[in-house]
Length: 194
Ligand SMILES: [Mn+2]
Image (cartoon, rainbow, N blue to C red; front, side, top):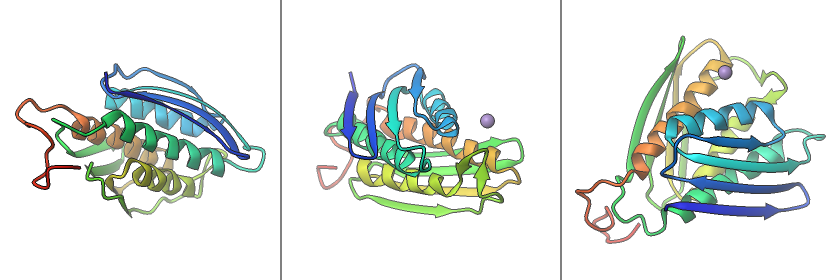
C-alpha cells in the first residue's frame, strides 16, 4: 500500500499527517485553519486520497506557520509514499471549473522541484484566511514532494471559488500523475530514475 505518515514538531507547529495514495477520498482533518481544512477535504475527495491531518499551530499569530508546515508535511508524505515511483504515470494535468472560475494544475513528479503560478485573486482574504498563503502552501508542497507544479488560475471573480478550483485540480492532477499505468515498465524516465 502506498502510504506515509509524517510527524513534525517545531516551536511553531505540531503536525501529524497520514496520506494514502490509493485511497477512497476520505479526509479526517483537524488543522486549526478552517479554510485550509475545507481545501484539503476537496483535495482528498477529488484526488481519491485518504488524508489525516492533526495540526496544532500558533494560529493566535496568524495561519502562516500552520499552512506552510502542513504543505511541507504533505509534500514529504507524497514523496515517501511514492517510493521509487516504479510504474507511475508521472505527469498529470487537470482543468477544474467552479462556477465562474477555471483553474488548471499541471504536474511532473520529476524529482526536480519547481513551482510556477499564474493568476490574480481579487481578494486578499477569504474569511479570516490570508489568500497569499495559497502560494506559500503550494510552493512548499512542490519543494518537499520534489515535483514540478504549475498552477494557472485562468479566470474567476470569486476568490473562494478560484482557490477551490485550484485544490480540486491539484487533487485530480496528482491522482493522474501518481496512478499506476500497467504499460509502464520500471521507472518512467529515460534516465532510469526519478
Ligand atoms: Mn467552498
